[in-house]
Image 1: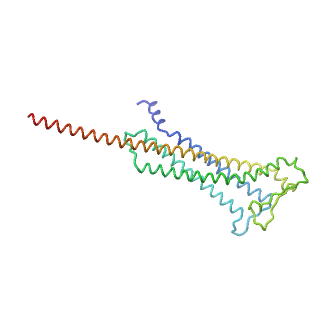
Image 2: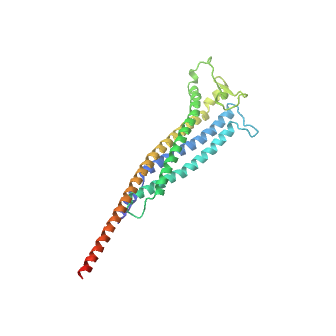
Image 3: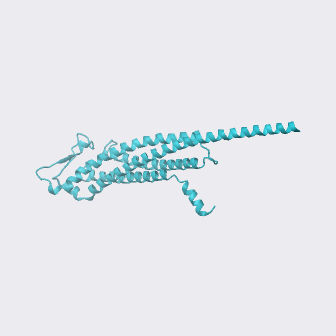
Length: 268
């Protein structure tokens, strides 16, 4: 076998559908985790600098503690889906090998089909989870878009029509605290002129796009896993049919050999 034939054989065994889904998953998770982490850091800067929100000196569940928890969740999501992408890619390789090498040394087992079914169920759950993450990420995008849009049109806003952003409306601070920023204040103008607002807003948009890409990757994985499970099931049935057929042929051959020996003994 030449080098080109060997390369073609190796390339033919690559599960390209699983490879595309894995690349899309890694790109979406990386975009969501990286941009989401930096957007949360930018949110902390905006709250401390322009809304005068300070971290609680005691161990209370304030907005900064929630942001720290979300950052740790992002670390866990990045690590978990890096491993999960590898597992799905390995499953794609084994399934492709099982289909292509049906008559070779690799045998399709009931355990392999159970593993494929388990991955289908797990991927479906993760798809629902990413849908929830996408919906949750759209909330800060909507909030920042309103502020960013007013900052972009601040020269056309009537100075007599002053609007304020009260953090109590978004549940960021408690009801007893009054942390609001009005369009006519100096802090609001400084925030609009700074880079933190624009950068944080676009980082949240990129994080939202990453979450959407992860949802698409999960849907792609569901289609790939469902197709692989169906192929493996059909291949397993075909393998059982071939085994039964081979066994029957061997029995017929044994019967024919026995009868031939009996006739030979009868003539002698």
